Image (cartoon, rainbow, N blue to C red; front, side, top):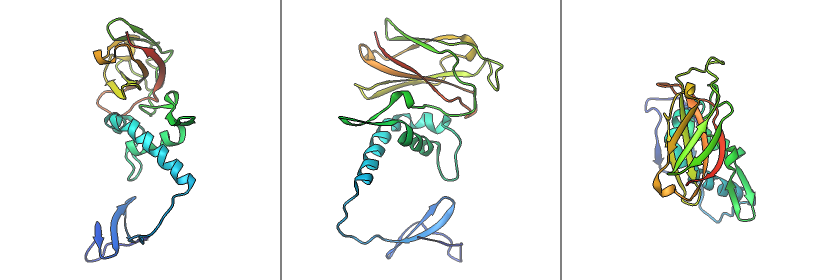
Length: 213
């Protein structure tokens, strides 16, 4: 792989003969096409591919949330890229059935805003989740008007539900009405705060698993 400065033709993207041009980390690069032939990936490569597949399948439905509230963009890396890297390293576990997501390690947001304090979760009749927390407004950059966001995931359905503006930090209690199709299923639940009209958010909190009534 080679980098080059823009000449009279500038950078290019795509294939020209046996050369491919692309933009990578803010630089124009050129590389030759790989030679075709037999290739057997190593066990380590197969492992990484399996992990990557499960992480992408899990995170893709949350892409809109992650692209808003997961850290800060770094060079050419989007917030979704950063979330993918984090979950590959921290939130995949090996089981007898293969690789699985460790829900307790999942983050739906990551930032410098003050997070949920003493959060609790309970499920009630009619697909209702009740959340309680302590108001920590005034601590650091926490404001009474920061918005609570909640994400619920039903593994058996492979479906998410999210609400990015459930209530404000100073409310200390809130209810979330899940869709009827989640009734009787177990859901994994995460909560966090975001600052309205910005991309500033807290490190999310895993609230646990409950069965939807």
